Length: 335
Image 1 (tube, rainbow, N blue to C red):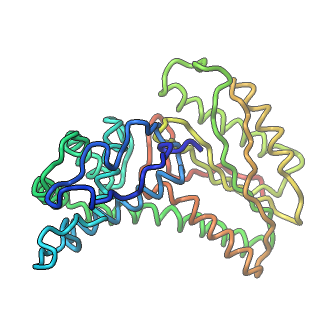
Image 2 (spheres, rainbow, N blue to C red; image 1 turned 90 degrees about the vertical axis):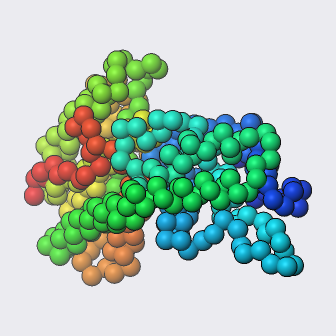
């Protein structure tokens, strides 16, 4: 996956010993111009790590659990800025680089607030001149006030509850298969929808999103009617997710009943044939798969953990539009 940015050799935190004690080391002290930034793909690991850290940071700020500076003492009359705030400021240029980063998406409330904070403070953060610390004290106080006005914690609770609901739904589907069908081949597909040509044959992002649904339904229609899967294909759980890079990925949980059989070559071949009809590349990354029977505790636990991980990117942002949605849909099987 594409990284959010290519890191350079700069230190993670700024060396305050090289800076006057009452100013924040702005400019190139913590962020250099040779950093390349791209819009992150769905599930990008580096973006997820940064986003999780920022959510935790802004939650603590909102709850007044952290301060920009420790209380001055006789031994240290000008204490250095809390490293957590320094780290937060270092992320601001990354988020401010794309003004429309979350446009059309539903971002986590705390990430949305931090993006706005970054846009409002990018000039100060990247100033070539040292900035007095009291300015950042005031700016973070203002940011906390914005979180209060937005009721960020309340909105975050609702946001996170919706993600947990999706997790629970897929866990219920898996448990139902195990309890009613004894054993099954469990397969999770992540299929990138990438065109054969650049620029693509369609004209707009809207057209691409609408067409992606047709591609998936044709693929599932073939699976439903395949003689190799006759009478053993459970209902398919599927959705199409969109990254901040605006690229689409199809996700599907497929349960094929019976003894352990390698169905991946069959699924791969038909995916490639389906994609050729829609001028897509037919990329088929190695799926997550296992065979499981009712009572096989370790394997069942591992699959449930996979379901947890599949939903992690939705903890940061999600997309719904033009017929595609992060909510799971069902395609009827043939059992």
